[in-house]
Length: 347
Image 1 (cartoon, rainbow, N blue to C red):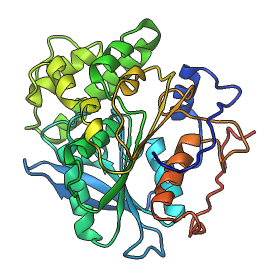
Image 2 (image 1 turned 135 degrees about the vertical axis):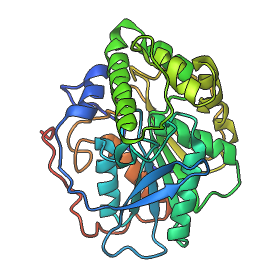
Image 3 (image 1 turned 45 degrees about the horizontal axis):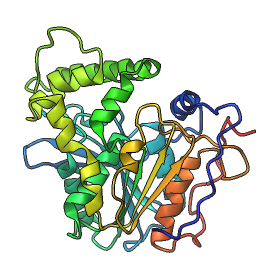
Image 4 (image 1 turned 120 degrees about the vertical axis):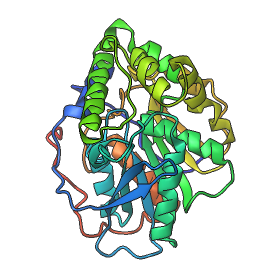
């Protein structure tokens, strides 16, 4: 277990429900970040490519820390949590690489095959590419939602074996049991999320086909209505799993967590409307993996009360705390970017 001390999460008084937290995490207006990243393409063994968005602080040194950030389902490097976390880490002297998973973001026309929750090999390729570019920099892997499942799966597969310069990791709101998450999304109160994600995923497929005529595809007899249907007729078929059940069984990270040997922080909420926490609670947690389960926070929400951090984004600051603690960087002053950012939720 980590000795890193975190303030408890206390939700914003107007955002106490799981759905309010989840929606605020996405739609609450915040600071706007100009895009200044350098893009790097990473070739994969099967001919596809992914893209890394490299944000380097002005006075970053070759031995300073770096971080690889992985987004969630239907996200990309532009997702709010990706931009905010990268910005805050940059302000503390950490170089960040925001990864667009296959077919996402600016990589929409660079991959024939789709991303999915089990593509840990793509993350390993990204870590290796970062290590080749900055060989003296220790790297923290940070995954959100689907990206968190990928993170935990890779860590368990690696056990004690090296992967680039990886020395620590953070997983936020990980869907460690994909089948249970699929069932959770089909509950009446959560169907809006199910429909929302299916719509985004179908549009991603359509965009990829406009840009890449030979992208892997299937013919839908009818438009999928749930994530399970989408995964059963598309993800599992084109990715070689056969069925959604087999995809979920193979790709779920719960079975890999007991083998993790890399110092890791897992942050999740008991009231997450998309991810039941009992999958994580049933999992054997090895030494060195620090699990922080909050009572509230929704899915990637964690919009807290004022007076705790520089803004109300409790989730972002816990990631920053963990990353800085890995290298005793906490004493470093913010460099080049103001940390105390305006947030309309501040009261």
